Amino acid sequence: MIDCCTCCGSDRKAPVSYKNSFPKKLLVAVSVVIVLAMCVTPADARSVEHRRRHQRRPDTMAELTKDTMKRPKNSSTEQYKNATRKIKHKLRNTKRFFDQDRRRLNETKEYRDGMPVWLPAVNFVDIHFHDYRTPRKAGKSITERKFAYLMPKLHKTLKEYQVIFKRLQNVQLNTSDESFNSYVAVRKHLLSNSLAKLYSTIAEIQENMVAVKMPIPHFDESRMKLETLKTKVDATQCLKNDYIAFRGYGNLLNNWYYEFRCPLNKKSDKKCAGFHAKMKEKLGNKRYKNRNNVSITS
Image 1 (cartoon, rainbow, N blue to C red):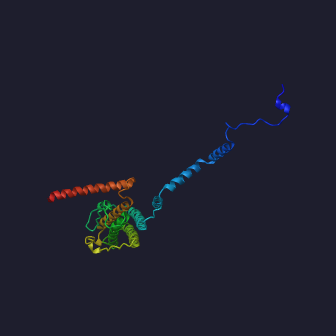
Image 2 (image 1 turned 120 degrees about the horizontal axis):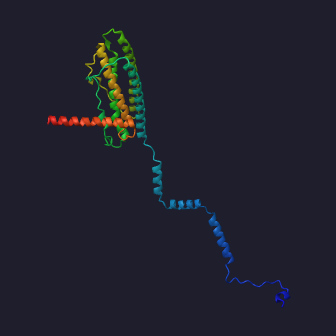
Image 3 (image 1 turned 90 degrees about the vertical axis):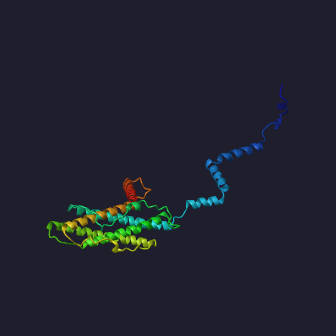
């Protein structure tokens, strides 16, 4: 039997029913959404989320974060830090040059020490353990309080040795020993160099005091006990006085240098640890002596 459609020769197709099929327009819309979702990268998604969080954050918190990150430096504190740094470097060079010259002097003659009254006494234990956290003046930083406490003391001790070295430079020797003359020549060189470096270091201290508007302390030479430091001496007394003065000055420069280099909170450095230990031992000895003095007098 021949199909009726073939017999009729008609091109018409049987109608398709869309009753249970997926709508064409809705299919296109879903495809477009899927394509757009695939184009959005994770980075874009994160940036969108970041913007949302930023929009939710209050403006006051954003300003606070910026102020914290870009907090300006205290110009006054920086000025004191720069002044202290310059003086510390000057003190280091003064110590280095003196050690070199004293080494030459030590090679010329052996001599022994003593503790006369004209030798300046500096209490480095009290200086090292001074409490800078106690506010002496309102609004002053620790750097400013430390500068104000240390610089007058440093200035005074250097001025004292300046006076002593001038006096040693004017010594009149009662000797004609030729072997001693070589010592005298090296001694003269050491005193001249030491005085030149002292002038320079003291000038540096005064200059930086003026820079931070701090008054230069008055130095009273008459308070020094120089009566026993005679200017007319023999070779033996000259050697003894020189050794005492040079050893005291070397210890002074060394202690001041480490006082600036090694504050109490810096203990990782090996040399600083040794300096702290030495000061702590002296502090213990001082307290022990004070307790004994109290028990004796009571």
